[in-house]
Length: 523
Image 1: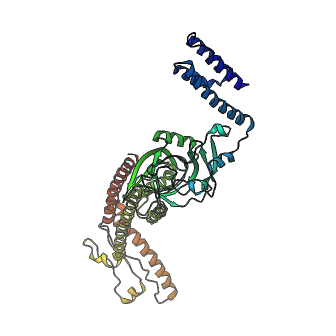
Image 2 (image 1 turned 135 degrees about the vertical axis):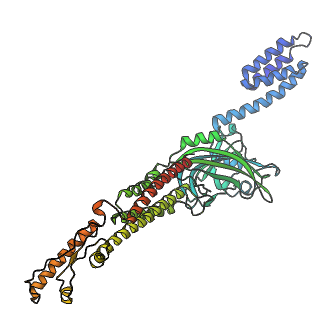
């Protein structure tokens, strides 16, 4: 019926004579008839034929060819849309895309070898799993998206029920041999085994990866440091004339997307992510894309667990100056605090890397405080030695006073002495003299004449009494030597002056050092 309508329109046009023909009206009528029969999208083609004709005969020949061609296409479209059921396998069969077809896997998918393959790369940071300063290792979890054009793949979606893309195993197509320069361990996690292929030849891979990479870290301001780690993608074999890497997103878009999908950051705070293109030039050139991840450490945990305890130990060392120098507890207290600092230094040794361009400020902080406390301990040892030296000197002078100094003092008064050997042997006499310079007569200890020294029991009693008297004599001599008048020994006075001067210098030095360290850390 459709063909009859075409024929009727064609004959009607031929029956119009050239002389009596109103070309615009007659041909316009014919075009409207065709427009009512044909699909809407064919109207422009019909009008184009109409506008280029000079006669009805030319029009009739052109329309005959046009009608036959359109009728064939119409029947084919009607048959496909109403009868055929499409599947993804139909597309693969049409492309001859199978696992054993080396055409799609052996070489780069270009029809002209001079055309480079443009690989678009997009990377998002999903998580910061670990940052290990000791081994200089950075472990992020990233999402990767790769797209490129396979020039050997194309199909018309209208011929396959509108199918515009299919998913196929990765082994069936050529994939760019990209690697990460900083990666030091192979990722053993699960990966997606499929990729998408579009009708226009665009191939898409979306995957996720745990990257154990090396990162050169600057721990000079630990724990108030900011680290920058790179993830650089490049082809292992193909040079820049074969594969060109193009970032799909700019730095701001990558940073914003990473913040939206970020799941965990640990003790770090993600700041930004920058994208840059470059080339590795050796004997040849390789195209590469570098993603720089910038992150700042959250220092609160290290401040509470490390910096503040050391500062508290330093305050305890300052408070130890209030302990008396004549007591041994001060020296033991300082040694205990110094040992506690040593334990914290061992913990610091497990955190910081063994090799660094500059000495970390926290190491300087610990070493200088350790040195301060060591000097404080040495000063305490010196002061204790001086005080004990003065005490020993005084005790030596007291012991010698009864036996030697009585007769040698210029102002002493002669006292009764024990003339006989027997009296000296039994200790039946003693002398008390003035050791303080005051003039008082020496008096011999009263000895009863009726005591019979030959009696052994009474002699022992007298010896005990004599010992008690000598103890009283030492006490009196101690007060008389200066303490009763409030005077200190020479070395004791030197020790106190030294202690006061050292404490002043020590306190000022500690305050200046802490201020300088805070300025360096927070700058």
